[in-house]
Length: 99
Image (cartoon, rainbow, N blue to C red; front, side, top):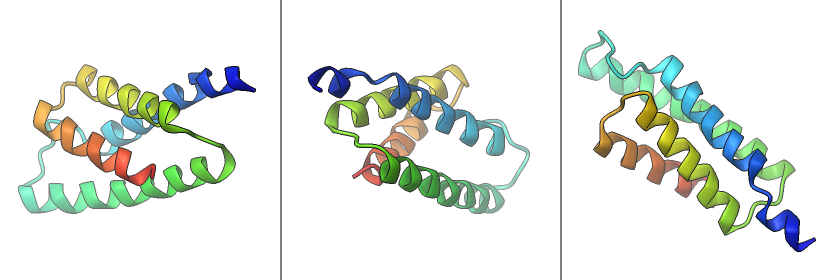
């Protein structure tokens, strides 16, 4: 039972998949103007929020797994080349959505 608390493989995979989902739909070097970029980002974040809610509804995730989701998300976005400040804002959004 206690070991399952530390088994964060699925949580890490979920965090990385959310980052891929975002990166595929909102490329870091998009040709869109700022208004269209903001609208597209909001649309994608709403879809991600639904994914987060579904994930939370079907699994028990404690603080450790939430941290692992956020960390995997953050590093996947870094690997994709997003701006550090933008990554921090997105990660904060994700961690808040996980509450």
